[in-house]
Image (cartoon, rainbow, N blue to C red):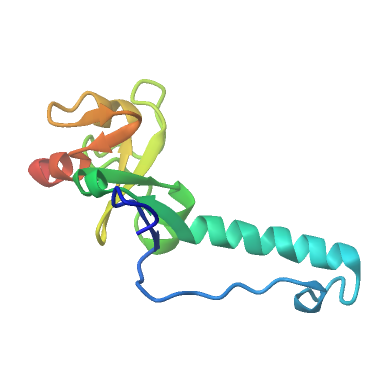
Length: 138
């Protein structure tokens, strides 16, 4: 734990620690140059921040929003279809597509389909019961 209230840092999908390298020696485009070190440091910082997320004790009830690009990477064969209304792509009326994750389960929904589903709640910009709504509809 980071502090006494139970907050902790977790690496996505793994309890093992990852090592991130940076420095002028890690870039093929600018080896042994100061700007190569700076660019590789910025790259490593992005990798670290994308791998780490804060997990609060009360986060277990919430579904996590993930980038649609990550959803597509993890599900290359599935089309960009809302799991509630089954319409493909972002629609003006239904809103843009948002990807959610809880455990290993990942789903894709239109913003309005998720927001107006009876069991879905948004509390402090966190989504709750999205996966439950999709499981009910399946």
